[in-house]
Amino acid sequence: MGGPGHDHGAADAPRSGDGPQRLPDGSLFLPKPAQRQIGVRTLVTEIGEHARAYELAGRIVMDPNSGGRVQATLAGRLEPGPGGFPALGQTVKRGQVLAWVVPTAGSIERSNQVATLADLRAILGAAERRLERHRELADTVPREQIETGEAEVASLRARIAALSAGLVNRDALTAPASGVIASANAFAGQVVDARELVFEVVDPARLRVEALAYDAGLTGGVAGASLMAGEVRVPLVFVGAGRALREQALPLAFRAEGAALAQFAIGQPVKIAVRTRQALRGIALPSAALVRNAANETVVWVKTGAERYAARSVRFEPLDGTRVTVVAGLTTSERVVVSGASLVNQIR
Image 1: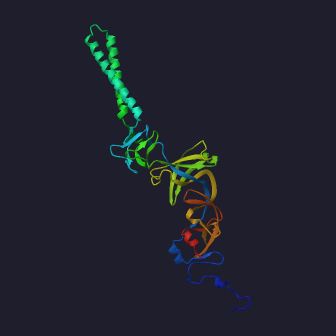
Image 2 (image 1 turned 135 degrees about the vertical axis):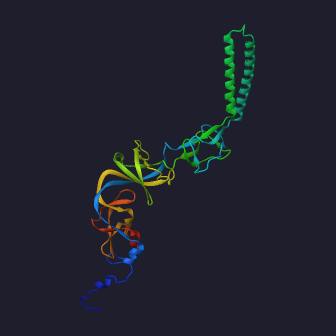
């Protein structure tokens, strides 16, 4: 045991060959073999100008120009189309018959139609016989009377055809656009009402994203946006902003280039990073570099030595979905852990 003034500081320093450990001052000792094992990668910080961004909640919606809804125009009973009822995810073409709607009528209404049809047929028979007699007496009967009889017969035949079609005709439900079946609510023998939704057709390569902006000033300064879904980042093109409030916010519409949105479903909630034209000075880092400490503060790990790392509390702003802009807590030319930060943060 040492006497007064004996220095025990050397006991706090890790010995050669020690494993990863957290030191009393909160920093970490991480040997080179452990760094390679957990895949630690660092990035040298550099301060620059970046576009200010906001993170908004959004959802995937249908592009009105490349999809549509199939609704019954009248009440009736569903019957399958030429190829049967389409299944979810099945590819269809514009104008393809998906199902038939056979109109249904009450017993009294149908009886009235049948009675009216019988009366019209009787009247047609009398009109045809009268027209035939007039034609036989064409020399004594005025031509105008014969033409009137012909018009009456033609009108009665058209009325009978229309009424007969109303009893047996069926309405075709066709695909409004080429795409895939997103939703199907059809079964053989099912009775539907007018305006009832039966199918939804969407083009997976032409979907849109809709977000709600609670800051009205954001709608006039959108420079770009990105969709965030885990590690997936999809660049979006700003289409426009609404001018009517929805849920106390203004809707913003975006679209993606190519088939980037094909992996998402209609109505799926997503996060959107919207970039504005306002400049923000800071350090751009991958989102994976940010972790939480025991006090629930956002920190990054900075490499201070060959095998030493220290935590720095930072403030940040979203940048493009996969990166953030650190606006406080770091300086230029520091080496920040951008890969393996979550594993480094777990060392005790």
